[in-house]
Image 1 (cartoon, one colour):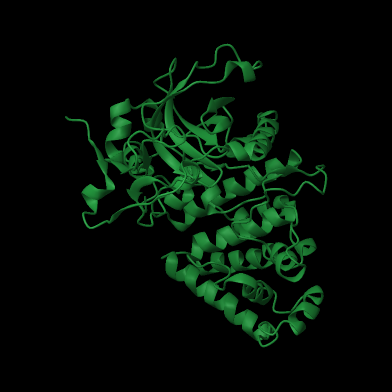
Image 2 (cartoon, helix red, strand yellow):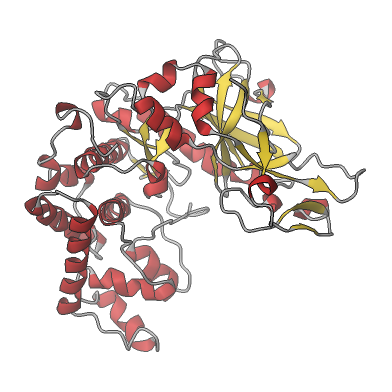
Length: 453
């Protein structure tokens, strides 16, 4: 067997145009690179002082010992980068192995230098969750194996080490039973966080996942890397050969095919069942945090109260709450089962879809609605609400062949409660778990292998 070579985008897309731009290095200009829009790779301009740390395959990430005085003495002295797992505006995430524990593969998350507050929030919430690890539901919150800071050309970066998890958005097609079982794990993890006094603050399908198969943990490096295929690389070269490029990586790398690796090793153990894991707690806050601590609040799927504050109250930011976690989980359950977002409109008109979930325009929204020329032409009525819920019901049936109709009725009933526009009317996470829809869950473990996987 031969090792798969590193290949560039130009090998798989010969017609891609390579463009050079001029400008300062700090803005990512003055470099030759493929500017074809590619959502799999982070923008090059994020590599500048104060932002992302340049990482390439084969790098050894070593902790800055002067900044980690309390790090356990038996922790790895460094981690070797094997591949990329993903990226976001605040961090890049890598598949790595500890120098002293090469047989154990981990996820290595390097925060952008300007996101130190988010890194600290995540670490605080994960440590609080782990402090009560004797509680069964704590396993559904990702464990923080190691944490430290590193110094690079773009600043000081917090780095978090955790287990490798397959994001649910990348998971293979799942049966309705498996979906429910994983979502029950997500709800349990959120309930555990709420018991610990923390709010996740950014619940969506990209921030939850499932455990990798046991064979993944015991496989050799070759057995792990081989299903991932070739490295998807976009080379980055300075226009000026003498120009310094410390702030930039030698290339931008697309994420590995972790889902292929999951399927390969999943097939070797048909009786194994995945468990849900919650991750990415950079938006987490404690219920006792000061109300004026609202920096860096992110909403991948904003709840109605956040949309109203933004559009009707002059861009006001509101803090996440346990009730907003419930709403966001409801929106995620809906999209996982129906493949249909809660709101199909953009901007302030998304508030129409939120209001239609209840069928009545909330009193606090009425004045804004009547004075806005775009919204006042759109009526919110119980009839339109019934049509919206019927469409969701039919979509769930269509997307989940063989699902029990009565079970869909129970799910719709639960979603109506979770997606209430009035945050005070929503159930707690504990009440969500006690709902008949979750209570009717049959454990996947008792059913054997999931044929859809």
